[in-house]
Image (cartoon, rainbow over all chains, first blue to last red):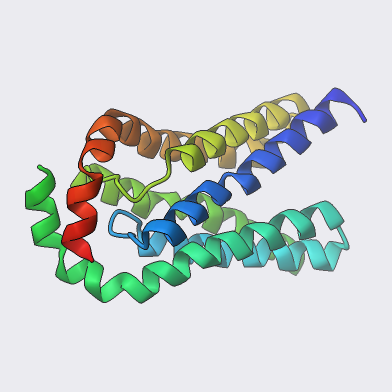
Length: 99
Length: 99
């Protein structure tokens, strides 16, 4: 394994595992007001396409990293979608409280 | 350009551009309570390593996608770090308001 492979592996590990603390925070607090629905929708769609790309190529590192990322990101998106109406309804109160 | 190249390009476009709506929301509202500091720190570090990886390989698609993602993700992280003390201090008030 070259040092370039090591950099790529650490990079892939970080950009996948980064979603773990967000999932933990979101499941624990159930608070999603500051999270953008559009971001997580687009991100999940993109990761799903990377997964298709990996499957077609038969590239296991792409498959494993994106399957894991998709599960994590879809969890955050699911909580956000459940909260969406509440998040929109409480926006004014929240903003005035925190400013 | 094969259809696999198209899938890869759309996937890369989505996972990069996904951060635009989050940056817009975060800069507009300056609210970051529900955003995990650990996620954005790890994600920025990982994307920076992907950038190094692309530079070493001389791979322009990896360089461009990750440079753009890094600027976007670092913007969200910067606002979160500025807000961090306030986010921690107001946690109780916020939770009781929204539940």
